[in-house]
Length: 292
Image (spheres, helix red, strand yellow):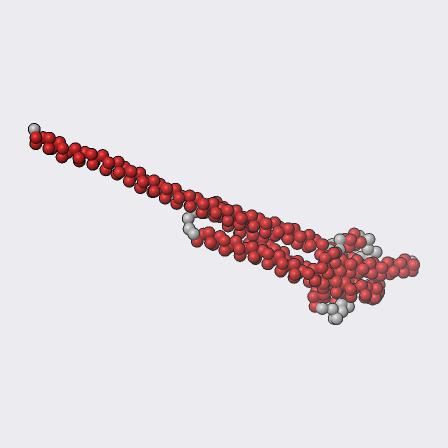
């Protein structure tokens, strides 16, 4: 009996000790769980915050690109308007300011493009999926680059048009100063070489035809010089051809004589090309078609 009591007395302390140990173990596990959970939550919160930051950056990028695109679109519209107005209103402005306008616009686009490239490269280098916003930003960047290419092409055409008008005007100034003399000499040469054109039993009728033919040549030269000065197509010529007093070949010979023998060597090569182009396309060819 005494031995049994001793055993009980020995076991009881163990039982007393085991209870607080289990509680301690559970407490430790709870602490570890809380720490792990809090760490995971903090890590997740950090990642969410970082993702939000990336999204904000992308939204700013997209907003900036849209602003630049608006500027580019406005420039494209203005360029198209300028292309229409060059012949009549914009020549002097283009000659003095075109290069400056191009530099300002191109610098804006280039700077915006470079900034977008750097930001996108920075985001991409961080790895991971940065969402649909990046795809949109990349698409915007590609569109901006296409707008820049379109702007450069439009500017090239605009510059060519401005230069061409300069040479057209040079040719027109010469033609205006020589118009009456050219008309008189050309009409005389044609009538001398083609006496059948004015053969008539009525002298008054022949004189009227000669005067009318000279006046026609003079009118055509005046009309072509005006359209040449603004680099435009001489639409009114098509109407006047229908009222010609003599056959079409007489007018063809008159204009060919001027073109082949009277165009001044003092004109620049480009001005000569312009005046020859107008004579061939809008004078000689028109009468050639009317005779067919």
